[in-house]
Amino acid sequence: MIVDIKLYIRTKAQTSSGNITFDFDDSILDFVSADPVISSQSLGNLSWSFSNLAPFESRSITFTVNVNSPQENPAVNLDDVLQYTANIYSSEGVDETPADNEFDLSQIVIGSYDPNDKLVTEGTVVDINKVGDYLHYMIRFQNTGTAPAENVVVKDLLPANLNVQTLRMISSSHAFTSRLTGSRLEFIFEGINLPASTVDEIGSNGFVAFKIKPASTVVLGSTIENTASIYFDYNFPIITNTTSTTFENLLKTDNFDRTPFELYPNPAKNVITISISSAITIQSIAIYNPLGQLVKTLTDAESVSSSSIDVSTLKTGTYFMEINSNQGKTTQKFIKL
Image (cartoon, rainbow, N blue to C red; front, top):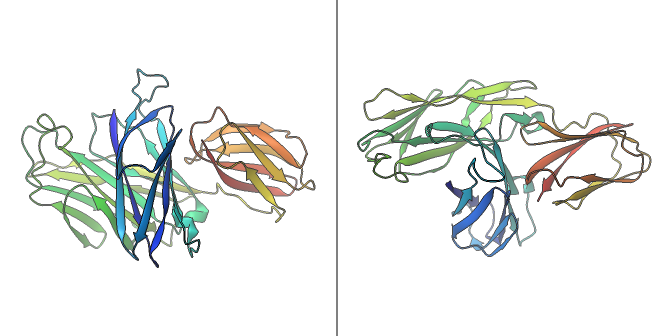
């Protein structure tokens, strides 16, 4: 299956130059093409150079990948999670908010029989320490009727635990106008003339993407659920799936001391090493994917200043390693190539 991916970059303070990298699982995704063309490519990694990005200027990169089918090896099936990581590096070397230079996306595989859907890119579980960060939503729609859709309207009743004052638009497939009435958000694609999928499969698709922050009432254990309605001309609405994001304590740093702690190499391909003070006794190690699912556990780890962990069986993507020691717990992120 061919999939198009679009990256957006934007600088906030000064004219910048640098490069952008995109990491993906090369065993299930094959790079096809990109606009603009890539600067370099390695296994599971694409890179682009950029220059003279003016303050508040936005640019985009569109590229195409081929995703393995269920008949290929390794297979990609419905409900599998595809993980991507994008990073931007500025040659200026000064950045007041380096945390927003990296973006992780966990995308659940959805069948083509249900093209009208909603996705929250942060996934179903988010660490409570990120409760002040944006959630990124995308609503996709496709005209599966028998004639062009002259107008398409997407309605999203934002739940009370999202802060409507922080709503920001990201991108869309077609020109639209928007309207926010209280917590009711509407995207109006007037005169879109979206062709039917039986006539133009690619042209029959559209999307709108936005970001919004959780409300101040969101605390540990809170769940944000959201559903959209898609209207094609005068037909009854198509109701999307319900996205669900729960805030949990994934990155625990309860009582771990400030002893130097490092993972290397990071990113890692086969083995990652923990460098830690000899005063600390490692009791167990757990590795979680971005959805908060436990993917690997090691118990009774040897009490040494460094331990090597085999990560060769993990899929390409971003993970969180939680170390339980005699001084408490701490978690650090690493990337598997």
